[in-house]
Amino acid sequence: MDNFSKAVDLLSSAMSATSLRYNVTANNLANAEVPNFKRTNVNFESELKRVLQAKDDDFEMLATHPLHIRSEGNKDFRQVSPHLSVDYVTTSKANGNNVNAEEEAMNVLKTQLNYQLLSQMQNFNFSQIRTVLK
View 1 (cartoon, rainbow, N blue to C red):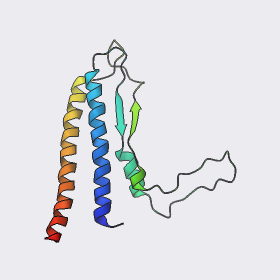
View 2: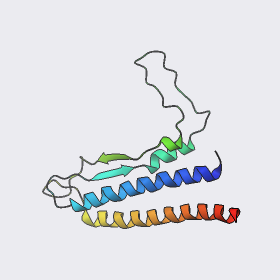
View 3: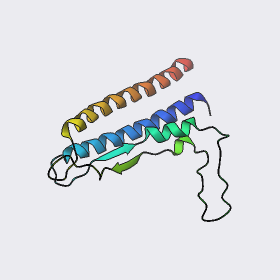
View 4: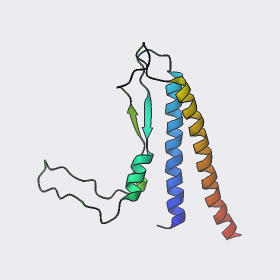
C-alpha cells in the first residue's frame, strides 16, 4: 500500500472516530443533570497505535486445544474501530451522575479542533495530488 492511500485511510478512520467522540461527548453533556446517568468514553487512538506499532514478525501464540487462548495475530489498521466504554465506577454527584459539564464542554471544543485539523490534513493530501495532476 502506498503512503497516500495509507494516509487517506488513517485520516478517514480518525475523522470517523472523532465524529463519534463528538456525538458521545454531546450526549454526555446533554445528560449532565440526569440522575444516575453514566458518562461514555470513546477509545480509538490507543488501539490504532498498538496496531500500527506491531511488526509482521511479532510473536503469535499457537493454539492446539479449543480452550487455549488465541492471539489476534497482526491486525490491519483499517480494521480498527472505536470502542465505547461506560464509566460505571465513578460518581461525582449526589444523584449518581458522573458527568462533569465543564470537562465535557472542554472535550467538545477539543474534539472540534481535532476534527478541523484532521480535515485540513486530508485536504492537504488531496491538494498535493491536484498539484501533481496539473
